Length: 258
Image 1 (cartoon, helix red, strand yellow):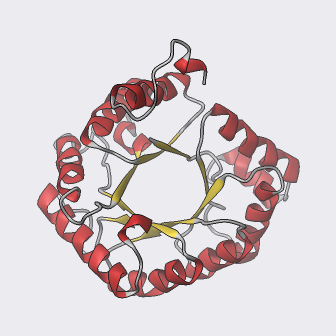
Image 2 (tube, one colour):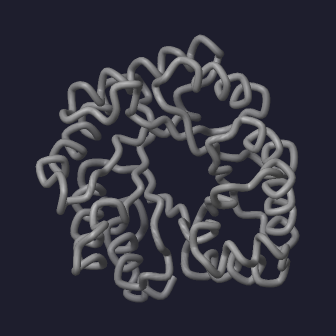
Image 3 (tube, helix red, strand yellow):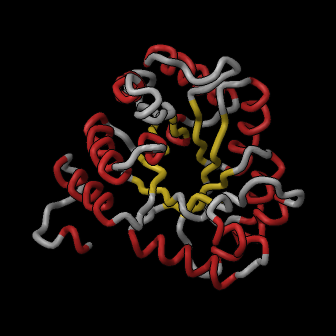
């Protein structure tokens, strides 16, 4: 499974301060720590309320690329900041994210095509997040067919069925799993899938346990990637063990140390 680190995000106070003061060493060390912990992709979010977000996003990309060649995910609601990140990145990037809203797809799919990027597609439209798997599936199909109109291959698409907190919407845990299973039937090859894992435990007292348990269920359903905290060692053990049990990686006695 692909591990996308959620930690380089200006919403975290220490990260926000490092971005605001352009503390290169702090940002670079954070990036290296995430890679060492097992992250495959680094999600970059400058945080809210930045008037010069395109400039800051470009700085963030360049700063991290000075110390690692890991894939980067450009995480922002602003298309201009997306493009600034894409221009600065050295290799294929991931864009996080579009919704099924037409204006959002029209703004981002041309960038995906121009820069041969990957993109996270949220099953969300003007009406909000659907309550059932079937509606999520319909929105996923809409985004896939729209992307194909821009000559974007399905292999570049990650569908996010949008996890809701178990404490507020307990029935949505199974709905997301059902949606992931449905997505497999949308195309051949099927689209990739991704979730923001920590959303499931938001507001609970057993966050790590709930995250670990749900991740194992999602992996069993065929989840491709998760935006998560690679510094949670027990959570990373689930990733590594799941990859072994699903025959995605070769078993060895020391697989947890790899």
